[in-house]
Image 1: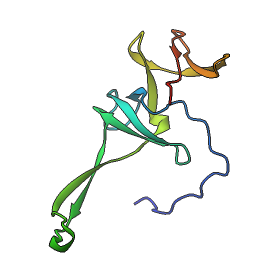
Image 2: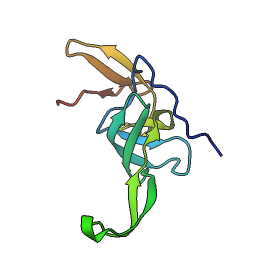
Image 3: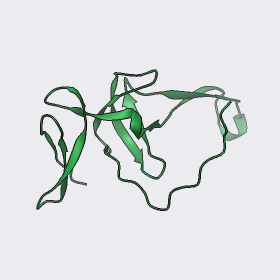
Length: 124
């Protein structure tokens, strides 16, 4: 059984190749080959929440508590996936792609390696 001890957080947060709102493909695991959309990214943990076909859920059994208005039963919660298992979906080829970063006047832009598709930064 794997250890439940968490490793200390890195002092410097790594750059991640995916962002919130990206369409991604799962590269390994039970949902290999399935696509989804990134809901939230946790850069310090190198993980991302994905919804859609690629979503993985944890099930928690909850006991009813009438005083706190909590219903009993099973609750499903999205499990974050490690970013190394995710690849950006290239809209031109509809396949997983690797990206490089290019500096432009507007800022840094991600560019697909094979098709040269530009993933423009969405306005916040």
